[in-house]
Amino acid sequence: MNGLARWVPRLMIAMAVLHFVWAVTQPNSWSDILHDGFVATAVDPDTNGFDAREATVWFMTAGLAFLALGTLARHVVRATGSLPPQVGWYLLGIGIPLCAIYFPTTGSWSMPVIGVLALMAAREPDRRHRRTGRRRPRDMRPPGAAPSVPAAARSTPILAPESEGGPDHVVPS
Image 1 (cartoon, rainbow, N blue to C red):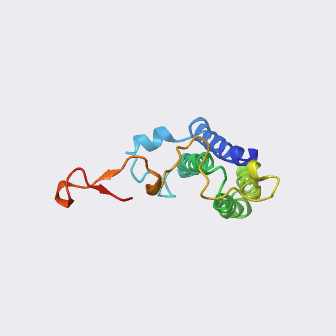
Image 2: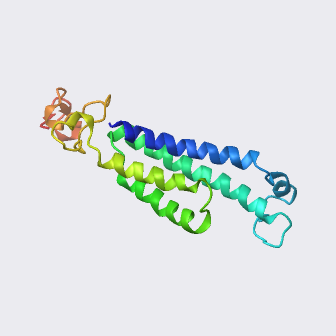
Image 3: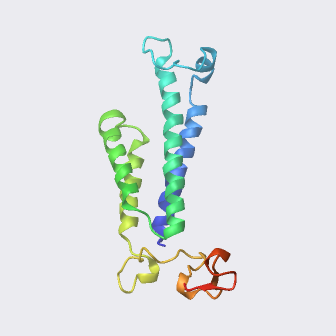
């Protein structure tokens, strides 16, 4: 597992935490949303405080999305030792339009930056195969995983049911 593959999920989770913090500390409208009944309280643009309500919901939802993608990426890196390139493409696909169209002067630029880092991490070979330049084989067990034993190598014979020759009849593996 390369260092960049470990850091990309951490950066996504950090981005999620920043969104959660911003959603509850910025001038938000959680009290207005709760006071109006919570359901469909941020859909009418003519409502007083619509922009604050929209920003509050937007930051909380984006934080949940980043948290989901970051924790899933962390799980994949721990299980396989590598980061799939799709993570980088997803972040670029979401981040570039956000930067160019919607939020050009905010922190949205961090999403394409993390997306590029994710693509770099996906291309970097695993350290165990650095000398040969090969990527880690997909069928290699992750560190700490129990070895899989094929049926032919089992030391305990499989006993057939009594209907197929009794309990002493051994079924070849």
